Structures are given as C-alpha cells and as structure tokens.
Length: 94
Image (cartoon, rainbow, N blue to C red; front, side):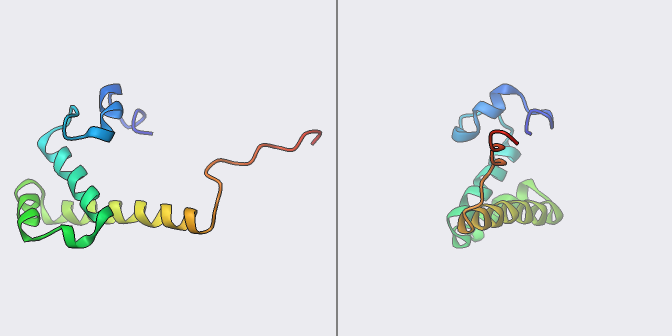
C-alpha cells in the first residue's frame, strides 16, 4: 500500500530502522510518536510533545494520534478474535 501512495522502495525497506532510513525530520518524528504510543501513552511526555509541536500543527498531531490508535485497535481486534489476515483458500472441488 505504501508503494501505491508514492513511497519509494528505500522508504519501504527502511521502515524497521526508520531513524537511519531515508525520511524527513517530520517523518521520523511521526514514526517515533507512533512507536512511543505503541509502547505506552506515558512515553509521550511533555518534552516529546513539545518536540512534536515544533514540527506539527495541533490538527496534524490529532491526525497522527488517531491514525496510530486505529492501527493499534485493528491489530488487537484481529489478534484477540484470531481472525485470518488473508482469505482462506477455497476448498478443492468447489
């Protein structure tokens, strides 16, 4: 999906080590924010929030928060209900 939205192959490959990846300061801060939210909301302390405010508008911070929270919710629902991530293969003969 990232490629369809314009991400380069290097950006896609760099996601797991985003700090060293080919991203802007804003993109890296967004990754750090999502990573901190994933571990604990308490990791977004006043100092880090001030860093975010220097890079993003209040509306952008809300959008980042909602997007990160939605992905957290999705994986928790899928995992807790043991839902398959891809459709099951059709049975033979049908």
